[in-house]
Every structure is written in structure tokens, then in C-alpha cells.
Image (tube, rainbow, N blue to C red):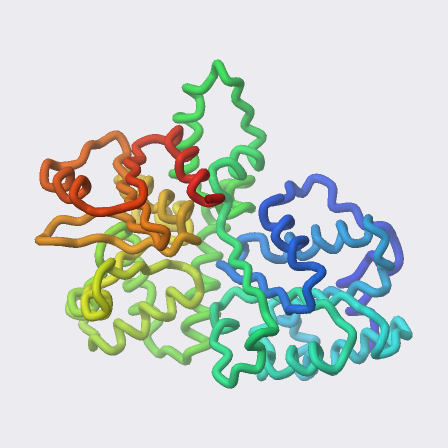
Length: 393
């Protein structure tokens, strides 16, 4: 195959690259920089079109500006049809041949959508063990975490990229608020609850873009990948999940509604979780309670949820955003005698999300008697400063 495709993916080999106009997500770039000196393979995961490719290219730009020779940096998208018959090892070998780089010369590999290649775990291990490389890779499927033969155990660091948070949303929209205009924050936040955080959709608000994104995940990453014969059943299932954001998901109830077996419903639920369309959190408690109790369901992106349900139930959207904010703290929900509290984090912080509402008397009683290191009631965007403080404790 001609080397032209490699040059197309790596314009910095021949000219200065300009990534002007792209708004950097500094939190993720900082995390990528932090692990740069480690030998470990860094894998970016997350929903399709959440910005993983952009982050890889922004990071490449940073490396070139810091003096790393452009020819030592190689980016490739492994879902490219022209590369279908080539292994990752073959592709890297051709890159070294094009740039006349020996095996012992240090190169920086940026491998986009690695899950498109069979046995990618083994191939990445071989590159890691046998060549002088630093690897950044990406995947829109959590299959990267399912390394059944443990090829990458001890060799990988996984960074999940989430949709834009509210602050990033304001940066993308160039929304500036003076301190005396704090009242505008509430208005912009409600707009965020409606639009969500998929970067391109935030900029264009083209409904068709979001529809295509959902269809791509459902038809390419679920239906085609798993050979599912009833795509409409999958779409109906996803619509039900979006209706139930912030609620416990009963496999048996959904199976009855959609006239499918509980095993099929359980399998479908796992597929949505693996492709980052949803997140599920377990109940807090003893092992048998965690296993037997239904999980609570949250949307990966608020805009996608609204696409399916319309913009309503701001309380559920607010709770969903609180979850996305504290996701790294591995929260669980509390459920006792029919009373539910939203989140109890791994560092023993109890959090209840109430957007413009109040706890019921029974919720107050449970909230007060639950032992916790800290207790927070989050009822507006200004309270998120408390959540940010949790993330750095």
C-alpha cells in the first residue's frame, strides 16, 4: 500500500500543524501529560465523538512544541478501511520504514480506535515489550478493559473521557459571566441541562448530528458487532432507559414490557454500558444486597437523554449531572425500607441531589441517621463548588 495514507494522518511530518480554534480540555491534557514519563500504555476510553481523537491530536501538538521531532510521532485511525487487512504491528513497521527509524529509536504512537483490530491486547503488549515506544490509544468500547488473557496487566493506564462538564460547556460556547452577573449562571446551566456535553453538538446544536451519533453506537457498536437480529428491540430498550434516568432498572420489568427474556434484557443492558451510553451504579450495603438489588441508571450525556425523551424532569437531569461530576468517587445509592438517597461515595460522603426541591420527612430521617464523613445536599449549580472540593481531597 502507498505511504500516502500515513502522510495524510500525520501532516506534521511535512508542515507545521495548526490546531487553532480547538478549545483544549485542560483537565484531560494534564492527565495525559502526567503519565507521559511512565512506560505504561495510556488508553483513552469513552462515548463516541466525546473528543478522544481531538485530545490525541492536541497532545501531539504539545509534544511537537516541546521539541520532540515530528517524524518520531505517529497517529493512525485503526478503523480506516484501507488498513483493514493490516495488523497494528504491520502498520507500525511500515511507519518506521517510511521514516527510517530503527527499532531502538524512541517513537510516540497514537493509535485511535484500537478495538477495531483483532487481538489488539497482544499486539500492544508486543510493541510495549519489544520496541522503544510510548503508546497512547483510544477506544469507544470498554472492551479495552476486558483483557481476558491479561496481556496488558500492569502495562496500561485507562483514562475515561466524559462529555463536557458545565464549565467546559461555557468555554466552548464562550459564555462569560462577571461576578455581579451570577444570576446568569442559573440560566446558562438550564441551557446546559438541555443541550448536554457532546462537543460538536454544543457548538452546532444540530439535532441530526446527535441522532446520527446514537444510531452509530446502536447499529455499529451494538447491533453489527454482536450480530443482533432485532435492532428495533435495542432502540426501544434504549428509549426506556432514557425515560428511567436516575431510577432503579428492573431487568424483569423491562423484559416484560419489551416481550423479551430477562437474559436478553440483561445482555442488552450490558451492551449499552460497554459503549458508554449509560452508567449503572449498585446499591450500597452488604454483598448480597448489592448483587440482588437493581442498579440505578444514568445517561452518559444529557443531550442524548433529551433527544429521546424531550426536555423535561429537570430534577432527574440535575441528579444525572451530579452523578457525572462525582463518578470517579464510585458512588452507590442507599435504599432502606422503601426510602432512597442518591449517592454514598467510596470516601464516605453522603450526597442528595435536589434541584429546587426538598427532602421528604422520611428522607431527612434517613439522611440524618446515615453515618458519613460528610453530608451534602446539592440543589443548585452554585453548590457544585462543594463537589469539586471532594474531587481533590
